[in-house]
Image 1 (cartoon, one colour):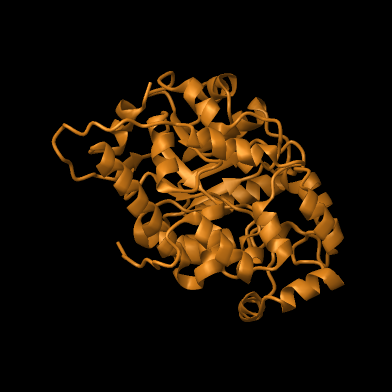
Image 2 (tube, helix red, strand yellow):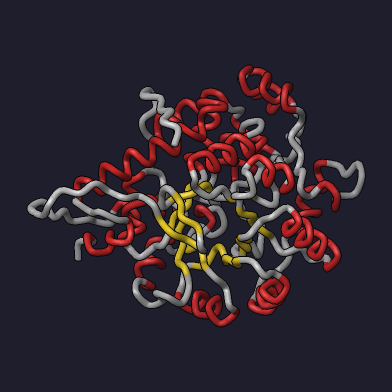
Length: 382
């Protein structure tokens, strides 16, 4: 693994501060934002930080093995890059930067359907190692063609997002008139000019577009019709019947993202899903919803050998990764931290974030005297 690490940015918060300095406000606020009053954002962080682990200091010292087996692959660490929409709006070429870093460091990168890089391009730069996050298109022909492209590009894992029956009510995005590409109103133009590094990088990379979805968009579609297009074409309802249809059509691993309770996990098992992501969409969809860690803790031990329990929402550090793994997760994903890193450090941001998280995670495991990630539940303070 590459050992690139910038000591000026040793944690997610320092990356966040630097990213905020280099990103237009409309892009930063899209990345940061939660739903309505944003209480769910704090709940995710607080309840994950409430997890307590207990060292076993008088046992023999260990050299932690951070590798994890998942869906027939061995990854270097128990965390990956979560799907984040509009990444190229937040920092130009962010999807490619992160996909390359993840492939190099041997962790999963999950490409969002609404990314600014095409699924074919990310399959190429990730050397076939990337995963794909799928919204369920309402149009049968669009769905069939998208699945055909995903398979042809060599993706083995699709992660179907189920927790967007409505658009999240995000106050700052409404104020900013967020769109892709960004609206050229006076406020947004001023923000772009105030951030010359972002503006120059965007000029080099070209105007961000939803590259994977471009074949399905009406030619010359105005930016103010994007939300309608997404709602009517891309983000169809995802219930058990829709998932069963996708299961029947997809012969790779099917992961269901966005469930937080035992009833939905039981339905995922009955459908034949290979995994679920315990996630509340980073608190971007339901402000009064329960945290992902609460849902995970309630499931601990119930589904071993039946389905893989993956986890995201609120994860910012190696400590958070360890807390989630100790609480019963088989794997974890982070979104905002990786985008902070790319915005802060550009091309080196992905490698830095991976190595930062790995250093933190190893420190926790060493302090606990935990030899393997699978053993972390033994260190959960009861």
